[in-house]
Structure formats: structure tokens, C-alpha cells
Amino acid sequence: KNQVEQSPQSLIILEGKNCTLQCNYTVSPFSNLRWYKQDTGRGPVSLTIMTFSENTKSNGRYTATLDADTKQSSLHITASQLSDSASYICVVRRNDYKLSFGAGTTVTVRA
Amino acid sequence: ETGVTQSPTHLIKTRGQQVTLRCSSQSGHNTVSWYQQALGQGPQFIFQYYREEENGRGNFPPRFSGLQFPNYSSELNVNALELDDSALYLCASSPTPNDLYLTTDTQYFGPGTRLTVL
Image (cartoon, rainbow over all chains, first blue to last red):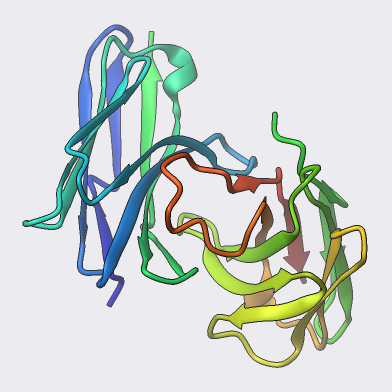
């Protein structure tokens, strides 16, 4: 069973609308959680990274939240743009070099 | 765009063949990690190289092997290719093998090599 579960698997939103992606994890011991954006056929690009003590972190129109007690994170996209169409991957790091990747949520923004 | 480059961009091989993928790390980075990403899935960790030595390995068979060179560039070699090896192969470089105490993400991914095994 994957230690990082993301939902939904995919979603379609209209340009200008907001959306929220979910990430639940069982990885332990926890070190940090990252959200990546991956355009089709390209490598992932980091959006945010949060450690245990951080609850919220923003990067432009992207806002990530973390609840380390319930082991849940979310990524909120505000005022979506066509360029936001991509796969968003949640990655959790243990207290070593090992990373656990979620399968990603595919976001499609339509005009 | 990160400073991590990979070659080739695309590759088509047949079952049983061998393949070598290449990665040039970001300047100043001495650690390279390789990942396999099947279609619609998240990346799976293959192995990591730090200062020319393997520094950790995921659940991949020995026919997946690697090298890191003195300039910290790296190769991924896959022998006896199987159909299930078809995937996007990503490499990522970082300044250290363990950025546990860093609050910024210093691991940068390359664009990947799309391998198709027929």
C-alpha cells in the first residue's frame, strides 16, 4: 500500500476558479512534505516544502497546508490559469534520505 | 528551468536490450538520485549516488545499475530490458544526500528520459 495517497486522481476546473488537492500520508518518522508541479513529459518542479512545525506555506497562487497530527496536507490553487494544467505530486520525506511519492492529481484548467 | 540535464530525451528499445541514460547535475551538487515514473504514477526511487558511491537503493533488481563520475554527472544502466521498464526516468540532483535540516527544497529534477520498450 502506498504510504502517500492523493485525491482526487484528476479534476477539471474553469479558468479563474479555485481548487484544493488532498494528500494523506502514513510515512513515519516524518521530516518534511513537498508539493511538486509536473508538466506533461517534464520533471517535477518544487512548489512548497513544509517541516513539522509549519502549518501553511504559500508560493504565489499556491497555498499548502499541513496537519502533522492527522497526517494530512492540502494544496490550494487560487484563481486558476491555463498554465496550472499539470500533475501535482505530494512527496513526504522520512528522517533519512528516502522520499515517498504520491501518484499525483492531474489538474486540467479549461477556458 | 533547473540546471539538471538528461539525455537522450526519448529512446526506443526492444526487450532484452541494454540502455544507458545520462544525467548532468546542477552546478555545485554532489548527489544524484534516479527515479522511474510509470505513466499515471508518482516517481519510484531507484538509487542515489553521492561522491561516486551508491548511497541507497529502492526496490529495483540488480539489472538496474548506475555510475557517478568525478564531475558528479551520472549514468543509469538497465540490462535485459523488459516491457514494464517503459517509463519516464528522472534524475534529481542536490547539494547533499540528506537535506533534513533545510527548509528550502534544494533537490532539482531534470526533464526526464522517456524510455519505450517494445
